[in-house]
Length: 355
Image 1 (cartoon, one colour):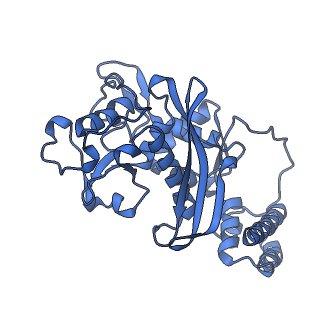
Image 2 (tube, rainbow, N blue to C red; image 1 turned 180 degrees about the horizontal axis):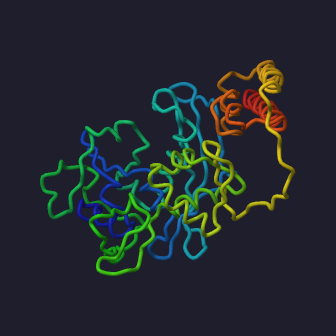
Image 3 (cartoon, rainbow, N blue to C red; image 1 turned 90 degrees about the vertical axis):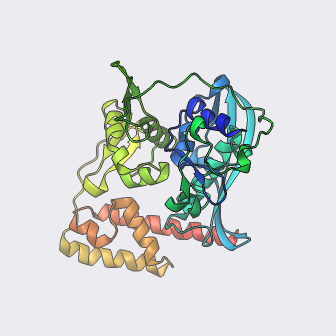
């Protein structure tokens, strides 16, 4: 596909902003941000088509799989392209993370993003044009390697890319949509929830609100912290507060906990929770008696300190037991839940080793 066609397709058909994609200087590849790929995935596509994203329960996780570069984490799932509810195409996608292709401390999140982005770009025909997600390689996000793309009429001085050679259109490619509604120069599609129609009054809701809601509703009953949500859907914390507040006001998202322990859950699919008597937090004396016993139990069954720390973070929102205690976040019941979760984690690890 020629450069002009590809640029116009990303802007006009998929509604991306010029900040959502760039060219990689070294390879000449066109790169799209993960959040840009999500915008494509969660919108109604041309010709009444729509991508059906699998639920978390349908993910297949291959932990400690043998890859070309040793042990790696692999996540796979089946994505579908539908037309009026009828499946047109299925695509089984894989995302892998290992010590050779990852500099992040979040291999699960990176593997999931790679799987997601590969499927979406393939189903809409962009992968066939040589377009990649920025999650594929660290160099794709290197500021020194980013070349900002210009509108086609001003692009003669850009390095040439093999990706923009005219090729046969993929079967599911769609005709361009009408030009998007112009927006005020003081607001951009990616950094604000609303953009105002130039000269008018009607607000156009930006994708971040939909991204947050779609993410939470795809994981019914699960609660996530602000940082977890921002990391997994690749938006900044500054882009989180305004759309999240609207979702809470619209009774679409529920908030629980306080401060660093605050979690958010999609109301759709929530089980009605009966009120329970208030839980008494541990006194310092109780903490000094109960917590060491609990951690020793978990260490005795083979859990590492990092495992215990991860469980504490998930259950309390704090990094360590002492930090949770200092913030009055521990109770006898919660400590028992942490120990049970540790036992379940150990059982899960043993099953994976057997497999």
